[in-house]
Length: 227
Length: 107
Image 1 (cartoon, rainbow over the protein chains, first blue to last red):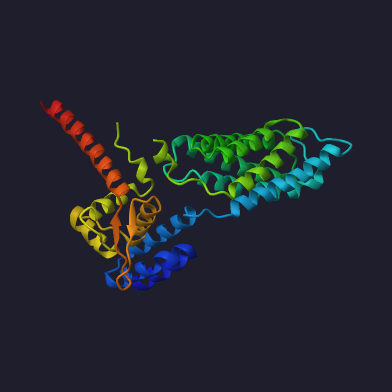
Image 2 (tube, rainbow over the protein chains, first blue to last red):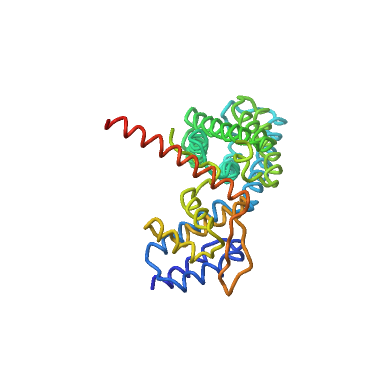
């Protein structure tokens, strides 16, 4: 029973990992006694393999470009429009797009943070926690606004927390020698802190540029080389 | 003052156990598990073993040899030997410090 469950767990691993290691692990599972905790151990291994693949997923890069692109278009429309909104004002038509952008940015920020690789420091953990909490609160408040609940200062606080957290993730990447991606992520985040629509444009363009930079794989083991 | 093993990253403890196991010669996954369990009294799960093996291989600390049947042996690389020696020296220094302090406290 446990052996069958253990073999089933192998299906949870990414295809690249399975191509490389599945035969060996399958042989190991078939050759030795398997306990229930081995099944859980394989599930944990599958989660780790998905979160930390040897070749990072391109999804965060695409997410950054998509979110940044949509935000850039809106910024240009607002900048060239007759009545720019007060910060953190949103024109009503923008709310659904803003919701989608914030949700997709969670993928982009998480992907950027995962480029740091192993041994996250407490500073890096605080950065990503703040960024994710900020984006989460920002999303909920935008959702509330989209269904007709008034928004204002809490939305500004949430987006500011998201921006500060993201900026710290950018700084962490720069410290870890992932300079280009880190700088672009930090610039995008600073753009969101600027209380003018031009800041939104910086935010959008910054994420587009960061997305393209994220297609390049981070150097692995950089901490070892720099220590 | 805690011993740090940043070079081994996540799964640092199983990675260290695997490097020690491979320091006496190439072994496949099953043999590593058996060796680690015999040496430490603690079983190493297959998920943890292969998460650590993948990381060690990616960092160039170990390398895979040609598989025999479905079992693929791994061996320590030169870089892996250097890292292992550094880790063990760090741990030895830390153990010495702890023992000295224990001696000071009881003496």
